[in-house]
Image (cartoon, rainbow, N blue to C red; front, top):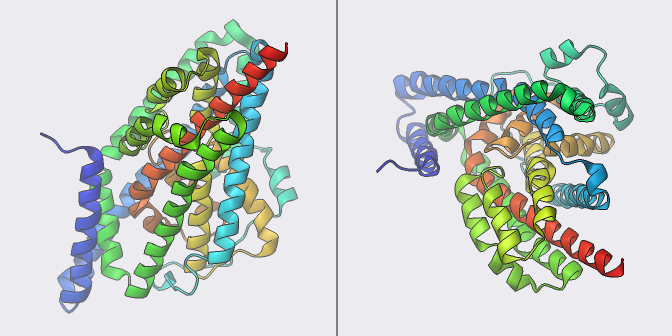
Length: 411
């Protein structure tokens, strides 16, 4: 029986790190291992990262356009759409704020110099102020935006393009179907690239094990621990007690009802793949109205990314600190705004958060080689990120359904 992709990735991760560490501590005096073999696997890892990065622009643009076009008519949903959208936005903002507070207090990666493991010249981090960032969201040249991979401009164009297509209705149905077909192709491409993940992760971890000193390794473990603690806090404490506060449903009952959803999302690491389980959890276990669930779940899989927000925030601070390029107070507002937009654009596919971290590393002027560290351990974190995302969808939709019941009674 073939092992699952998750199992293969875990094997690749640990084997790569163990063998890489063996080269550093046992075979460092043999040039073939310490130079040639490390360079070979470094190249393989770079190729894997490049394969992921080449899909970023088309994936984000097409998925957002399709997401807007597939939304129900907000006029017919009225109050429901506004509530669901508003709760999702608030959830993402709170998650970013909490992660930012933790990152500023704990300073993950601080005191560790990982710049010595890269061959690039590191320059000062350049992040525009918030007003400049807002102004530059509107591109003067759409082609240039795609060429440069300016993700914020691409997200803006996708929202505008999708909104206009949605407003034209049946007149552009053929175009909508075309975008949906391209979206399926992009999802398939992501799937194909992810089948190579065990080998890419092995190569990245081999390079990491062969070049990372013990102090830096401890910092990486600390980084992983901070993210996992925050994600599990959100998953098992924040969301259950938010549901208790707004609906009266005991937190323990909510945790029990979402258990299947958590286990399934841990195995798939995909919000989109978990949509059927999320729908079943809401309608059959929590008694949520099917119309409310039908609107809220697909929207949540697209834009309710509390887990991704936490992940991106902690990761970018870790990279900046570890490579000696910490963010200044003046850069924080623009950074928060970028994280918010990229979190919404992360999509519901495996590795979405990792891809957006790569985009943010590039945007903030950090060395792209830093992405290798993030990518190498992404699969461990991504499972918990997805669980936090989908349980967040369930919590928000459950709360919205309860407020709709109250409105109907009052009406």
